[in-house]
Every structure is written in structure tokens, then in C-alpha cells.
Length: 406
Ligand SMILES: Cc1cc2nc3c(=O)[nH]c(=O)nc-3n(C[C@H](O)[C@H](O)[C@H](O)COP(=O)(O)O)c2cc1C
Ligand code: SF4
Image (cartoon, rainbow, N blue to C red; front, side):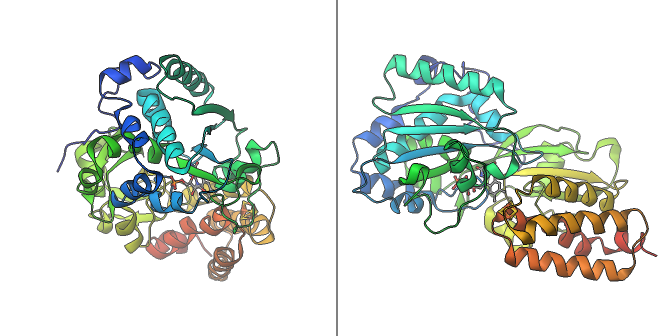
């Protein structure tokens, strides 16, 4: 299998992403029309039956998440997570740039399912051009009347990675400092301004029009059985074609890198691949035949995360890369909880010691112990996942660490 399968990106660069009229001409807003004719429970069931799972990293069943929203609540919100702060990830930007109307339609489908009239798109602060594009797209859809009484507003973040975490994102929209909230209650029950709120990723929402238009069985039949559909992959690092691809979820990592990505630059050998963004595991060459679906990645101790694939060739210094990553997490830790605030600081400190050739093997034992505590005790996913690059590289590339210690 070497071809892309374009669903969300089928009309990329063929239609104006801002124009609702152009989107309608290629079958847009048919899914929403169908959704509006369905009972809420049937619509949620249709999305559940498709097997569609969140593309923001946690892989939660979309219809199931929606079913937790109380039916009798008067005010409910749909929030689209376009924070996309994960280094190496830009798939949500691509969806907006190529098919923004599908995102708006997906949000309105979600609103129809849960009984919400108000949606917010939380866009990362580094994407000012996308904010402009989305505002124009919303205006175009409103002018054509396709969104009906569903209103969408755009809110801008200010560059904090933690604001991608759904409860920190909600805090940020409310105008507070972006720190995660205790869960439960989950946003589905008490989210934005205390009202039931569905938070879904851009890719998750933009897939909905196609599920509604073509039917849940069609979607369930694409890719991996337990994580069906397509996935947009962003390939970075030492690959020849560092760009984006949309592939079915049973596509294997090796084909992403060698068939679509053209292999490693300069004919060099591959040393490692990091999947899912900065907090993803480093995967050695022998695991490249793994499918890029949520469960297959989990089975090798990795995570699909955002779908970013970062290629490192044989010349790359793994310990140096992990040291830089540990600086990133120290910088992005919001400081709310001790295990992450102190832990990311100490991880960076020990990694720098190892990287500069001043550490002993005791430091490796210490950092492993520290990361195990962080995984168990940190308040949110940032602190819990930040140890993964350290642990996975000590597991698969231990020789690179021991080469640097005294
Ligand atoms: C530190 C951190 C950063 C996150 N960043 C993002 C992000 O940029 N985009 C995103 O969709 N989800 C992000 N998430 C996951 C969200 O909390 C949430 O699970 C997701 O938006 C739900 O959408 P989905 O069910 O459609 O995947 C992040 C989680 C954590 C812990
Ligand atoms: S784990 Fe880190 S980012 Fe999350 S609440 Fe604690 S300090 Fe903040």
C-alpha cells in the first residue's frame, strides 16, 4: 500500500477553503442536512457505530463522549481544539487551510447531536492567518444560511502548550490563566462556564460530514477495525518529503517514511522515529512495520498522539535531542503541581548532566525513578507524558546514554 487515501483533503487546493458555496458544490453540508433530520439519540448512535475515535491524542469514542452530555441542560457548548501546540504537528492547520468548511459543518453536526447552538474554535496564538481564514469561512457559511441557528466564534490562545489540554483550554477561553482543572467532572457534564461542553479536535470534527454523508458502515470499513477512518500524518526531520499525508489508519509507519516520505535524506540509515509529538516514544527501526492506529502504537509502547512522525537519521545524537525535549517540557510546565513543576526541572538538569558527559550511571537510575513518579503523580497529561521520550530512549538506545557517562 503506497497511496494516500484522501477524504478530508480530497478537494485540497481545488476549492477555496473559505467559500461555503464552493464546498456545497462538492457535496458539502449534505451530512449536516441529514443530521438535522435525525433524532439526537439516533445521530449519536450513528457516530458511535462508525467507530470514530478522537484524533486529538486520547482516542476516545466520539459518539460515546457526546452521549455523556445531559439531555435536559439548557445551555451546552461545542469547543473545537485547534491549539495544536505539539512540535512537528500541523495537520489541523492543513485541514483549515484546505477544507475549513468541513470543520464548521462538523461542529454544527456535533451541536445538532448534543443540542447546542454555540460553538467556539480555540486557535493557537501562532496561527493568526488561520483565525482570519476561519472568520471569513464562518461569514461565508452564515451568508449562505447553511449553519442555521448554530453560531461559531473563534478564540485565540497565547502560546501555551498546556492550553491544548481540554480543561486548561476551557479556563483560557473563560479568560483565566491556562491551568488544567480537576476531572471529574468532565467537560461533557460541567465545562465552559460550568455548562456541558464537548471538546473535540479539528480532525475529529472535520471527519463528521463524511461519516454522515457516506454512512457509519462506510467509515467503519476504512483502515484499522478498532480505530477506523483516515489519519493525517505530518512528516518532519530527516525524511526526503517532509510534508503531510492522509492515509487509512491501517497504513504502516515504514510506508509513511519510505513510500510516501521517500526514505531518509542523503541515503542515510534510519536511527529512530518519534511518533505523536514531543511527548511521544522513540521507536527503533525494528518496529517500523506497526500500523499507525491508536491500539497498534500502544502495543509497542508508543502513542499515535497527534500523528506527527519525526525521522532521525543515523548521525543524530539521541541524548542531545532528548535533552532539548526536556527543556521544552520544563518551559511549558504550567507549575500547578509539584511532580511536574519540579520533575521537569530535574529531568532537564539530569539530561544536561548526561549530555555534557558529567553524569554517572546513578544519574540514569535517578532519572528513571523520577520519571516513574511523574507519570503516576503529575496532575495532567503534560507531566504524565513528558517522561516518555526519556524512558523510551533509555530502553531502546541505552548505549547512547552509557557512551556519555563517566
Ligand atoms: C498537554 C496536553 C496538550 C494537548 N494538546 C492538544 C492539542 O493541541 N489538540 C488537541 O486536539 N488535543 C490536545 N490534547 C488532548 C485534549 O485534552 C483532548 O483530549 C482532545 O482535545 C479531545 O479531542 P478528541 O476527543 O477529538 O481527540 C492535549 C492534551 C494534553 C494533556
Ligand atoms: S502536570 Fe504540569 S502542566 Fe499539568 S498541571 Fe501539573 S504542572 Fe501543570
